[in-house]
Image (tube, rainbow, N blue to C red):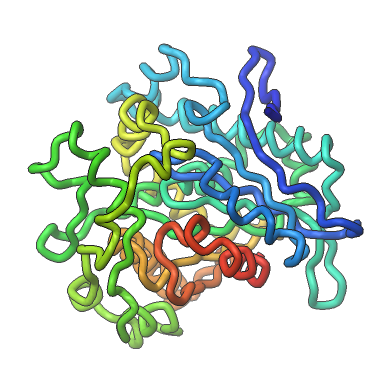
Length: 363
C-alpha cells in the first residue's frame, strides 16, 4: 500500500498510481481527489485507460479516508469548532499536506515537468478535484501564499491546471438558491442523518434529466445578456434521478467511507461558507493573485450534462462570476467550462474509458 509522508509527525497519505505510460518519457499526470463518502478507489476503473491517452493517473485518499491517516481528536475538535479562526487553521493544514504530497510524489516518481512548445503544453501535473473534494482544490490555489516558498517554487515547474470536476456549492461558498427552486437532500429537514447514508448513494449515482437547452445556453454564454436567470435555470433542473434506486450498496463497499461520512465529512460541509467564498473570489476574480501564485495554472471547470442539480447549479454560479468579471473588465485566472455530454456525477466509475479520454482532452 503506497504511503506518502507529509509531515514530521508521521501523517501519511495513501495513494494509488497507474504508472507512467509504457515507453513515454513525456506525459501528463492527473492527481484525483475524491469527494465525501468515497475514497480514492472510485477513480481506479479509469487506470487501465490512462496510457492510451498519454496520461498517468494518481488517486489520493484524503485524510480520514481509505488508507490515509485518520484525523486526531484535536483535529476533529478544530474542524467542529464554531470559531472561524479554528476552521481556517484546519483548512490551512490540509493545504500544507497537499503541497507536501505533491512535492514528495513528483520527486519520488520523477514526473516530467510542464513544458510549453509553440502552442502546446506537455508534461506537468493537473489537480482534478471531484465533488466536495474541490474544497481542497480551491483552498490550495487560493491559499498558495501560505505554502513554503521553496515548495511553491518547485511546484510551479509542474502544476498545469486545476480541474474543477462536477463540484457542489459548499467548496466555493455559493449560497443555496431558495428551496422551492432547487432541492437537495443535504438540507432536507425531513431527512435525519441516520437515513442520509441510505439516500446518498442513489442520489449521487443516478442520472438526471438536466441536459436541456438552458444547460447548454448557460455554459456556452459569452456575455451576461446570453446567460439565463437563476430562476429560469433552476426551474429547468430535475432533482429526482430517473434511475439509481436499484443501486446495491454492497457493490460500493470498498470505495465508500460510512464512518468518515459522519465523523468528518458532514462536519466539513458545515464550515463557515464565508471562508470558501473568500477563496473563490481570490481564485476567480483576483488577477494579481493569479499572476503571483502558480501563474501557469488554468482552471478547467467540468459539469456532466446529466449530473445532480446541485452541482449543475454550482457550475452555473461559477460561470456567472466569470461573466461578471469579464463584463467589468477585471482580470483573473484563465478558466474554461466543459459540458461532459451524457455524464452523471460518477461517470468515472460507471463509464471509465470515455471519462479517461475526456480528461485527456482537457488537461
